[in-house]
Amino acid sequence: MRRTSLFLVLPLLLLLVVSATVRSAAAAATKVWKGEGTRYSVMAFHAAGDGETDDSKAFEETWESACRDSGGANVYVPAGRTFLLRDATFNGPCKSPITMQVDGDIVAPSTLWQLRSSSVLTFHEVDNLTVDGSGQIDGRGAPWWDCHNHKKCSVRPMLVSFSFCNGLRVTNIRLKDSALKHISVYRCSQALVHNVSISAPGDSPNTDGITIGASHHVRVSSSSIQSGDDCVSIITGTTDVNVTDITCGPGHGISVGSLGGAGEGPAMVERITVSNCKFFNTTNGVRIKSWQGGQGKASGFIFRDLNMTEVQHPIDIDQFYCPHGNCPERQGGVAITDARFINIHGTSSEREAIKIMCSNSVPCHDIYLDNVDLSCCRHTAPPKAKALNAHGSVAGTVEPQVRFLGR
Image 1 (tube, rainbow, N blue to C red):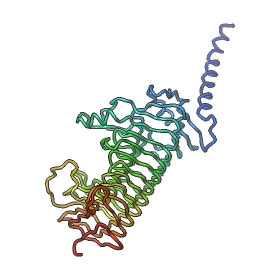
Image 2 (image 1 turned 90 degrees about the horizontal axis):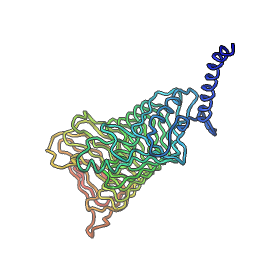
Image 3 (image 1 turned 90 degrees about the vertical axis):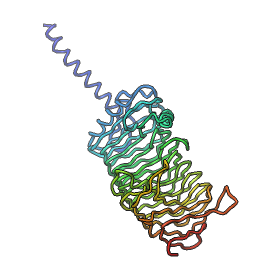
Image 4 (image 1 turned 135 degrees about the vertical axis):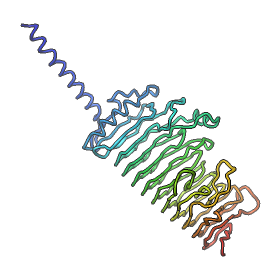
Protein backbone atom coordinates (compact mmCIF):
# COMPACT_ATOMS: atom_id res chain seq x y z
CA MET A 1 0.00 0.00 0.00
CA ARG A 2 2.80 2.43 0.86
CA ARG A 3 4.68 1.54 -2.36
CA THR A 4 1.55 2.26 -4.42
CA SER A 5 1.11 5.64 -2.70
CA LEU A 6 4.74 6.49 -3.40
CA PHE A 7 4.31 5.82 -7.11
CA LEU A 8 1.29 8.12 -7.11
CA VAL A 9 3.06 10.90 -5.20
CA LEU A 10 6.33 10.97 -7.24
CA PRO A 11 4.77 12.28 -10.51
CA LEU A 12 2.95 14.94 -8.50
CA LEU A 13 6.19 16.04 -6.85
CA LEU A 14 7.94 16.17 -10.23
CA LEU A 15 5.12 18.32 -11.64
CA LEU A 16 5.42 20.71 -8.70
CA VAL A 17 9.20 21.03 -9.18
CA VAL A 18 8.82 21.75 -12.90
CA SER A 19 6.07 24.27 -12.21
CA ALA A 20 8.21 26.04 -9.62
CA THR A 21 11.14 26.17 -12.05
CA VAL A 22 8.96 27.77 -14.74
CA ARG A 23 7.62 30.32 -12.26
CA SER A 24 11.17 31.09 -11.14
CA ALA A 25 12.32 31.71 -14.73
CA ALA A 26 9.32 33.96 -15.34
CA ALA A 27 10.04 35.87 -12.16
CA ALA A 28 13.67 36.29 -13.18
CA ALA A 29 12.56 37.56 -16.57
CA THR A 30 10.36 40.28 -15.04
CA LYS A 31 12.39 41.18 -11.95
CA VAL A 32 12.65 44.90 -11.11
CA TRP A 33 11.08 45.87 -14.43
CA LYS A 34 8.70 48.81 -14.09
CA GLY A 35 8.34 49.73 -17.76
CA GLU A 36 5.54 48.83 -20.12
CA GLY A 37 5.01 45.16 -20.94
CA THR A 38 7.06 42.23 -19.69
CA ARG A 39 10.83 42.24 -19.31
CA TYR A 40 12.62 39.14 -20.59
CA SER A 41 16.19 39.05 -19.32
CA VAL A 42 18.67 37.04 -21.36
CA MET A 43 20.08 35.80 -18.05
CA ALA A 44 16.82 33.96 -17.38
CA PHE A 45 17.41 32.02 -20.60
CA HIS A 46 20.88 30.89 -19.54
CA ALA A 47 23.11 33.52 -21.13
CA ALA A 48 26.57 33.37 -19.55
CA GLY A 49 27.57 37.00 -20.02
CA ASP A 50 31.25 36.22 -19.54
CA GLY A 51 32.46 37.49 -22.93
CA GLU A 52 33.73 34.01 -23.87
CA THR A 53 30.71 31.70 -24.04
CA ASP A 54 28.60 31.96 -27.19
CA ASP A 55 25.31 33.45 -25.98
CA SER A 56 23.61 33.58 -29.40
CA LYS A 57 21.20 30.73 -28.61
CA ALA A 58 20.20 32.28 -25.28
CA PHE A 59 19.50 35.61 -26.98
CA GLU A 60 17.42 33.95 -29.68
CA GLU A 61 15.38 31.97 -27.15
CA THR A 62 14.78 35.13 -25.13
CA TRP A 63 13.63 36.88 -28.29
CA GLU A 64 11.26 34.07 -29.27
CA SER A 65 9.49 34.24 -25.92
CA ALA A 66 9.27 38.01 -25.98
CA CYS A 67 8.07 38.06 -29.58
CA ARG A 68 5.10 35.85 -28.66
CA ASP A 69 3.98 38.26 -25.93
CA SER A 70 0.91 40.19 -27.05
CA GLY A 71 1.19 42.75 -24.27
CA GLY A 72 4.47 44.41 -25.25
CA ALA A 73 7.89 43.05 -24.35
CA ASN A 74 11.41 44.13 -23.43
CA VAL A 75 14.41 41.91 -24.17
CA TYR A 76 16.87 42.94 -21.49
CA VAL A 77 20.66 42.76 -21.86
CA PRO A 78 21.88 43.68 -18.36
CA ALA A 79 24.66 46.12 -17.57
CA GLY A 80 27.93 44.93 -16.08
CA ARG A 81 28.24 41.89 -18.35
CA THR A 82 29.70 41.14 -21.78
CA PHE A 83 27.90 38.82 -24.18
CA LEU A 84 29.58 37.04 -27.09
CA LEU A 85 27.33 36.77 -30.16
CA ARG A 86 27.73 35.54 -33.70
CA ASP A 87 25.05 35.53 -36.40
CA ALA A 88 22.25 36.02 -33.85
CA THR A 89 18.94 36.32 -35.74
CA PHE A 90 15.75 37.88 -34.40
CA ASN A 91 12.77 37.24 -36.66
CA GLY A 92 9.29 38.73 -36.71
CA PRO A 93 6.53 39.40 -37.00
CA CYS A 94 5.97 39.80 -33.28
CA LYS A 95 2.59 40.03 -31.58
CA SER A 96 3.19 43.52 -30.16
CA PRO A 97 5.79 46.31 -30.08
CA ILE A 98 9.11 45.04 -28.77
CA THR A 99 12.25 46.63 -27.32
CA MET A 100 15.76 45.27 -27.02
CA GLN A 101 17.36 47.12 -24.12
CA VAL A 102 21.13 46.80 -24.53
CA ASP A 103 22.67 48.04 -21.28
CA GLY A 104 25.41 45.41 -21.24
CA ASP A 105 28.14 45.03 -23.85
CA ILE A 106 27.99 42.74 -26.86
CA VAL A 107 31.10 41.51 -28.66
CA ALA A 108 31.68 39.48 -31.80
CA PRO A 109 34.30 36.70 -31.77
CA SER A 110 37.86 37.96 -31.90
CA THR A 111 38.75 35.67 -34.82
CA LEU A 112 37.30 35.07 -38.30
CA TRP A 113 34.05 33.25 -37.64
CA GLN A 114 31.81 33.31 -40.71
CA LEU A 115 32.23 32.32 -44.33
CA ARG A 116 28.92 33.65 -45.64
CA SER A 117 27.23 37.04 -45.68
CA SER A 118 25.68 37.73 -42.28
CA SER A 119 25.54 40.15 -39.33
CA VAL A 120 26.42 39.86 -35.68
CA LEU A 121 22.80 40.85 -34.94
CA THR A 122 20.05 40.56 -37.58
CA PHE A 123 16.49 41.84 -37.14
CA HIS A 124 14.14 40.69 -39.92
CA GLU A 125 10.47 41.56 -40.46
CA VAL A 126 10.08 43.13 -37.01
CA ASP A 127 7.67 46.07 -36.88
CA ASN A 128 7.60 48.63 -34.05
CA LEU A 129 11.05 47.63 -32.84
CA THR A 130 13.16 49.76 -30.50
CA VAL A 131 16.84 49.06 -29.86
CA ASP A 132 18.04 51.27 -27.02
CA GLY A 133 20.49 51.29 -24.15
CA SER A 134 23.78 52.42 -22.68
CA GLY A 135 25.77 49.40 -23.83
CA GLN A 136 28.31 48.94 -26.60
CA ILE A 137 28.33 46.54 -29.55
CA ASP A 138 31.88 45.73 -30.64
CA GLY A 139 32.43 43.98 -33.98
CA ARG A 140 36.13 43.26 -33.30
CA GLY A 141 36.75 43.82 -36.97
CA ALA A 142 40.56 44.04 -37.11
CA PRO A 143 41.16 40.42 -38.26
CA TRP A 144 38.55 40.89 -40.99
CA TRP A 145 40.14 44.14 -42.22
CA ASP A 146 43.51 42.42 -42.48
CA CYS A 147 41.95 39.45 -44.28
CA HIS A 148 40.23 41.80 -46.75
CA ASN A 149 43.36 43.88 -47.34
CA HIS A 150 45.25 40.70 -48.21
CA LYS A 151 42.44 39.66 -50.59
CA LYS A 152 41.67 36.51 -48.62
CA CYS A 153 38.08 37.32 -47.56
CA SER A 154 35.32 37.79 -50.13
CA VAL A 155 32.58 38.29 -47.52
CA ARG A 156 32.58 39.96 -44.12
CA PRO A 157 29.82 40.28 -41.49
CA MET A 158 28.00 43.52 -40.77
CA LEU A 159 27.42 44.53 -37.17
CA VAL A 160 23.65 45.20 -36.91
CA SER A 161 21.17 44.84 -39.79
CA PHE A 162 17.47 45.67 -40.00
CA SER A 163 15.38 44.51 -42.94
CA PHE A 164 11.71 44.62 -43.97
CA CYS A 165 10.58 46.66 -40.98
CA ASN A 166 8.20 49.48 -40.08
CA GLY A 167 8.41 51.83 -37.10
CA LEU A 168 12.07 51.21 -36.23
CA ARG A 169 13.85 53.20 -33.48
CA VAL A 170 17.58 52.84 -32.75
CA THR A 171 18.64 55.15 -29.94
CA ASN A 172 21.56 55.84 -27.60
CA ILE A 173 23.66 52.74 -28.28
CA ARG A 174 27.37 52.70 -29.14
CA LEU A 175 28.87 50.63 -31.94
CA LYS A 176 32.51 50.13 -32.88
CA ASP A 177 34.91 48.29 -35.17
CA SER A 178 32.53 46.42 -37.44
CA ALA A 179 34.10 44.04 -39.95
CA LEU A 180 31.94 45.77 -42.58
CA LYS A 181 29.01 48.20 -42.25
CA HIS A 182 27.94 49.11 -38.72
CA ILE A 183 24.19 49.61 -39.26
CA SER A 184 22.22 48.53 -42.32
CA VAL A 185 18.60 49.61 -42.84
CA TYR A 186 17.05 47.81 -45.82
CA ARG A 187 13.44 47.90 -47.02
CA CYS A 188 12.24 49.72 -43.92
CA SER A 189 9.78 52.57 -43.45
CA GLN A 190 9.39 55.15 -40.68
CA ALA A 191 12.84 54.53 -39.17
CA LEU A 192 14.72 56.68 -36.65
CA VAL A 193 18.41 56.44 -35.72
CA HIS A 194 19.10 58.95 -32.95
CA ASN A 195 21.96 59.73 -30.56
CA VAL A 196 24.13 56.78 -31.54
CA SER A 197 27.92 56.69 -31.52
CA ILE A 198 29.81 54.77 -34.20
CA SER A 199 33.60 54.49 -34.29
CA ALA A 200 36.15 52.66 -36.42
CA PRO A 201 39.63 53.65 -37.64
CA GLY A 202 39.81 55.87 -40.71
CA ASP A 203 41.72 53.17 -42.62
CA SER A 204 39.31 50.31 -41.83
CA PRO A 205 37.90 49.16 -45.19
CA ASN A 206 34.18 49.56 -46.02
CA THR A 207 33.14 50.23 -42.43
CA ASP A 208 30.26 52.57 -43.31
CA GLY A 209 28.46 54.01 -40.32
CA ILE A 210 24.83 53.77 -41.47
CA THR A 211 23.68 52.44 -44.86
CA ILE A 212 20.09 53.04 -45.95
CA GLY A 213 18.71 51.15 -48.94
CA ALA A 214 15.26 50.72 -50.52
CA SER A 215 13.75 52.51 -47.52
CA HIS A 216 11.35 55.40 -46.97
CA HIS A 217 10.81 58.09 -44.33
CA VAL A 218 14.09 57.68 -42.45
CA ARG A 219 15.61 60.15 -39.99
CA VAL A 220 19.20 60.04 -38.72
CA SER A 221 19.93 62.63 -36.05
CA SER A 222 22.25 63.81 -33.28
CA SER A 223 24.93 61.17 -33.79
CA SER A 224 28.71 60.93 -33.98
CA ILE A 225 30.21 58.73 -36.71
CA GLN A 226 33.87 57.89 -37.32
CA SER A 227 34.56 55.25 -39.93
CA GLY A 228 36.73 54.04 -42.80
CA ASP A 229 34.01 54.70 -45.36
CA ASP A 230 30.82 56.78 -45.63
CA CYS A 231 29.46 58.11 -42.36
CA VAL A 232 26.00 57.76 -43.91
CA SER A 233 25.35 56.17 -47.30
CA ILE A 234 22.01 56.31 -49.08
CA ILE A 235 21.58 53.82 -51.90
CA THR A 236 19.00 53.05 -54.54
CA GLY A 237 15.28 52.71 -53.91
CA THR A 238 15.33 55.22 -51.04
CA THR A 239 13.06 58.25 -50.60
CA ASP A 240 12.47 60.89 -47.93
CA VAL A 241 15.59 60.74 -45.77
CA ASN A 242 16.52 63.46 -43.29
CA VAL A 243 20.07 63.45 -41.92
CA THR A 244 20.67 66.17 -39.35
CA ASP A 245 23.07 67.13 -36.55
CA ILE A 246 25.73 64.57 -37.45
CA THR A 247 29.43 64.85 -36.61
CA CYS A 248 31.29 62.97 -39.34
CA GLY A 249 34.98 62.15 -39.47
CA PRO A 250 37.19 60.48 -40.17
CA GLY A 251 35.42 58.86 -43.08
CA HIS A 252 34.24 59.50 -46.62
CA GLY A 253 31.46 61.94 -45.76
CA ILE A 254 27.71 61.61 -46.31
CA SER A 255 27.02 60.03 -49.67
CA VAL A 256 24.21 59.21 -52.03
CA GLY A 257 25.23 56.11 -53.98
CA SER A 258 26.98 54.67 -55.57
CA LEU A 259 24.11 54.41 -58.07
CA GLY A 260 23.71 52.62 -61.38
CA GLY A 261 26.22 49.85 -60.90
CA ALA A 262 26.32 46.78 -63.11
CA GLY A 263 23.29 44.54 -62.66
CA GLU A 264 21.43 46.96 -60.37
CA GLY A 265 18.67 48.04 -62.76
CA PRO A 266 17.39 51.63 -62.91
CA ALA A 267 18.42 53.63 -59.85
CA MET A 268 16.00 55.81 -57.91
CA VAL A 269 16.71 58.16 -55.01
CA GLU A 270 14.46 61.11 -54.12
CA ARG A 271 13.96 63.77 -51.43
CA ILE A 272 17.16 63.64 -49.40
CA THR A 273 17.97 66.38 -46.88
CA VAL A 274 21.30 66.75 -45.07
CA SER A 275 21.47 69.66 -42.63
CA ASN A 276 23.34 71.04 -39.61
CA CYS A 277 26.22 68.59 -39.90
CA LYS A 278 29.95 68.95 -39.18
CA PHE A 279 32.70 67.21 -41.13
CA PHE A 280 36.26 66.75 -39.87
CA ASN A 281 39.15 65.42 -42.00
CA THR A 282 36.90 63.47 -44.36
CA THR A 283 37.65 62.68 -48.00
CA ASN A 284 34.33 64.23 -49.04
CA GLY A 285 31.69 66.35 -47.41
CA VAL A 286 28.37 65.72 -49.19
CA ARG A 287 28.52 63.58 -52.30
CA ILE A 288 26.34 62.10 -55.05
CA LYS A 289 28.13 59.33 -56.95
CA SER A 290 27.05 57.16 -59.88
CA TRP A 291 28.64 54.79 -62.36
CA GLN A 292 28.98 55.48 -66.07
CA GLY A 293 26.40 53.68 -68.20
CA GLY A 294 23.84 53.36 -65.41
CA GLN A 295 20.15 54.15 -65.64
CA GLY A 296 17.56 55.86 -63.47
CA LYS A 297 17.26 59.15 -61.64
CA ALA A 298 18.35 60.89 -58.46
CA SER A 299 16.58 64.13 -57.56
CA GLY A 300 15.36 66.40 -54.80
CA PHE A 301 18.47 67.03 -52.69
CA ILE A 302 18.95 69.72 -50.06
CA PHE A 303 22.38 70.07 -48.44
CA ARG A 304 22.34 73.02 -46.07
CA ASP A 305 23.98 74.55 -43.01
CA LEU A 306 27.11 72.41 -43.17
CA ASN A 307 30.54 73.07 -41.68
CA MET A 308 33.70 71.59 -43.22
CA THR A 309 37.10 71.30 -41.52
CA GLU A 310 40.00 70.08 -43.69
CA VAL A 311 37.72 68.13 -46.00
CA GLN A 312 39.29 67.10 -49.30
CA HIS A 313 36.23 67.81 -51.47
CA PRO A 314 33.39 69.42 -49.49
CA ILE A 315 30.93 69.33 -52.44
CA ASP A 316 31.12 66.46 -54.92
CA ILE A 317 28.82 65.27 -57.69
CA ASP A 318 30.47 62.46 -59.64
CA GLN A 319 28.86 60.65 -62.56
CA PHE A 320 32.19 58.95 -63.30
CA TYR A 321 32.48 56.97 -60.07
CA CYS A 322 35.27 54.43 -60.44
CA PRO A 323 36.84 53.54 -57.08
CA HIS A 324 39.41 51.10 -58.46
CA GLY A 325 40.42 53.05 -61.59
CA ASN A 326 40.60 51.99 -65.25
CA CYS A 327 36.85 52.09 -65.89
CA PRO A 328 36.02 52.14 -69.64
CA GLU A 329 34.14 55.16 -70.95
CA ARG A 330 30.43 54.41 -71.34
CA GLN A 331 27.42 56.34 -72.57
CA GLY A 332 24.39 56.95 -70.39
CA GLY A 333 24.14 57.47 -66.67
CA VAL A 334 21.87 58.13 -63.74
CA ALA A 335 20.15 61.50 -64.25
CA ILE A 336 21.01 63.84 -61.34
CA THR A 337 18.67 66.83 -60.97
CA ASP A 338 17.54 69.39 -58.39
CA ALA A 339 20.46 69.40 -55.96
CA ARG A 340 20.73 72.45 -53.69
CA PHE A 341 23.81 73.39 -51.67
CA ILE A 342 23.04 76.21 -49.22
CA ASN A 343 25.06 77.79 -46.39
CA ILE A 344 28.15 75.61 -46.60
CA HIS A 345 31.33 76.96 -45.00
CA GLY A 346 34.77 75.82 -43.94
CA THR A 347 38.07 74.57 -45.30
CA SER A 348 39.19 72.19 -48.00
CA SER A 349 42.42 70.22 -47.75
CA GLU A 350 42.61 69.94 -51.57
CA ARG A 351 42.42 72.77 -54.07
CA GLU A 352 39.37 71.31 -55.82
CA ALA A 353 36.89 72.17 -53.12
CA ILE A 354 33.87 71.79 -55.41
CA LYS A 355 33.59 69.04 -58.06
CA ILE A 356 30.49 68.72 -60.24
CA MET A 357 31.42 66.16 -62.87
CA CYS A 358 28.56 65.07 -65.11
CA SER A 359 28.40 63.02 -68.29
CA ASN A 360 27.97 64.41 -71.76
CA SER A 361 25.11 62.03 -72.57
CA VAL A 362 23.18 62.68 -69.33
CA PRO A 363 24.15 66.14 -68.01
CA CYS A 364 23.20 67.30 -64.53
CA HIS A 365 20.35 69.82 -64.28
CA ASP A 366 19.09 72.30 -61.69
CA ILE A 367 22.19 72.40 -59.52
CA TYR A 368 21.92 75.38 -57.16
CA LEU A 369 24.54 76.92 -54.87
CA ASP A 370 23.80 79.70 -52.40
CA ASN A 371 26.10 81.21 -49.76
CA VAL A 372 29.01 78.79 -50.12
CA ASP A 373 32.37 79.87 -48.72
CA LEU A 374 35.23 77.37 -48.82
CA SER A 375 38.93 78.16 -48.38
CA CYS A 376 42.10 76.07 -48.61
CA CYS A 377 43.84 75.10 -45.41
CA ARG A 378 46.95 73.41 -46.86
CA HIS A 379 47.66 75.54 -49.93
CA THR A 380 48.70 79.11 -50.46
CA ALA A 381 46.76 79.18 -53.73
CA PRO A 382 43.00 79.73 -53.49
CA PRO A 383 40.60 76.81 -53.86
CA LYS A 384 38.93 76.10 -57.17
CA ALA A 385 35.78 74.52 -58.53
CA LYS A 386 35.49 72.15 -61.44
CA ALA A 387 32.22 71.67 -63.31
CA LEU A 388 31.58 69.53 -66.39
CA ASN A 389 28.30 69.12 -68.28
CA ALA A 390 26.29 70.71 -65.48
CA HIS A 391 23.38 73.14 -65.72
CA GLY A 392 22.68 75.26 -62.67
CA SER A 393 22.65 78.62 -60.96
CA VAL A 394 24.18 80.47 -58.01
CA ALA A 395 22.96 83.04 -55.51
CA GLY A 396 24.71 85.07 -52.86
CA THR A 397 28.45 84.62 -52.43
CA VAL A 398 29.89 81.37 -53.81
CA GLU A 399 33.62 80.75 -53.33
CA PRO A 400 35.24 79.20 -55.21
CA GLN A 401 33.25 80.33 -58.23
CA VAL A 402 31.37 77.71 -60.24
CA ARG A 403 30.76 78.06 -63.99
CA PHE A 404 27.67 76.20 -65.18
CA LEU A 405 26.75 75.56 -68.82
CA GLY A 406 25.01 78.50 -70.46
CA ARG A 407 26.08 81.04 -67.84
